[in-house]
Image (cartoon, rainbow over all chains, first blue to last red; front, side, top):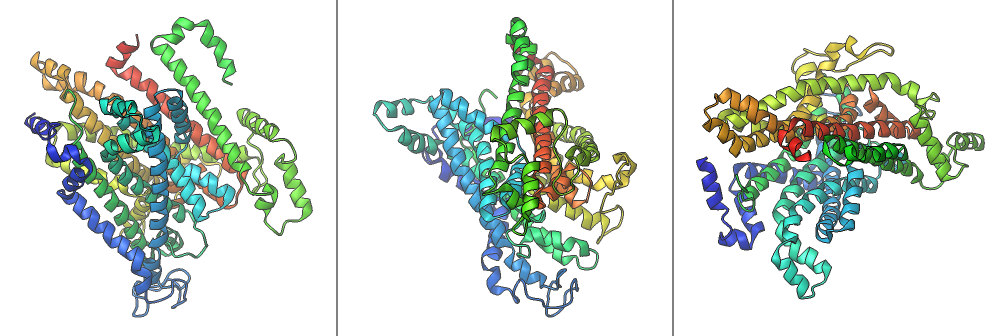
Length: 301
Length: 336
């Protein structure tokens, strides 16, 4: 009980900085938590591998450096894969695609989801119903299902993956944004902007959007985690742009047959994907905890 | 199929517009409408094939005869509304067309696999639901204690991991490199019941359980904390009821409401999760079949499995809404 009293004091609406700049306050609050710092460290490390790994890789990712499935040696420090390619070099090259597609599809989903969610909340009429029913239909599929239907029809190109993952991320973001914007829409400053004759576009994106940034950052990191996991899963199922592309997900699939003789080809990329998603997950949790302390006053509780 | 429901709805207006029964009927109609829209989306996806679908499926080297045969088989020379109604009508009577890769009826191919997948999902649900409700409720009762802190960290990490990483990690730890306790692949010979090879079922089930449990634990914990702080629980305590009765009679039933929604979402999620998990363990279910059908571009199979998974998804959400109403005393009285 005493913990709640402290909570209520901390979220009193006249807290100066947080009230004026909720995003800055949330980021600062999140960075005070160890989980956010650990998450940031993990993500930074793997982003560096993905961006600069190809520069420091000792071999080409598709060069044959020895017999297949050989244990680590001086030429191949993590051994070779099923085709006799260097596991270390393929690992250093293999993060770019996952990270790039993950960020692109999450960005697409966030932009569309924020637009739909805020417009639905602001319109308060049939448009709200229509938009949210359309979102419900997309939500009636598991994300991976829709991505697979798209891949079956068009093929596993980068654009198909970005579109499929982005479009299925959209309704999830839209729901959260609509929920967050609904109480904001009723506030006096929105009515004031309407009276001043501001355009609807400006009201939605310049007046309402800045008031929902803290659920948005939480949702963004959550969605990035899931998008990366989904794209890695699709690669693991074998759906990458080219058959022998260096890709952490595909590497695990290719090398898992030889798991007993050469585990490195599986363990290293699996650990990289795990650390990346756990890292973004930790950052998201840090943001969520910081947000809970800023703008989520405990109603009657 | 929606029109068929309307007369019933009209005849029993008083039943439909009010009360728990009305809520169920309305949710059922909404579920049917969603399924209908989903079928449009699945069908439209196949129309998105650039150019001639028959050529796209068979590739450049296709002979004119095989192209004509495939066009005939896919009804491509008919109008699009005809193709759609033909496909949907077939699905409703259990005829999902012919597999392009196996040249056998899709239903024949998927029958056994559907049973296997259903059994896998059932096992995962039966294991994960009670465990996660218990963990969540206990964490809430011992809020900020050692159990709560460690369970929240573990669920955070598990929720972030893709299922295939969890599955591969389990194979490394339990089935190959580190120890050799369990088989890494589950093989169910055709015509055998899925429960014949229980040992091979352990790792796929465990992977799905680990994928789903974190979400249910979290929502159960949050909802239990909210209920424990509510006025009616305080009231029950002030009345002098024993703590055990407060928890079992007053707190737990009300905390389960929001949890049912998340359990349903996650059961529905299991229907998608089987795609990855079945592939990891070579489990002969519809998930693995979908992966193979996608890589061979076997569109009738892809469409059929997509509809099955979507139907499971819609129905579980429906069941959750109804269960939530029935189990939450507050909501039940509000509908009356």
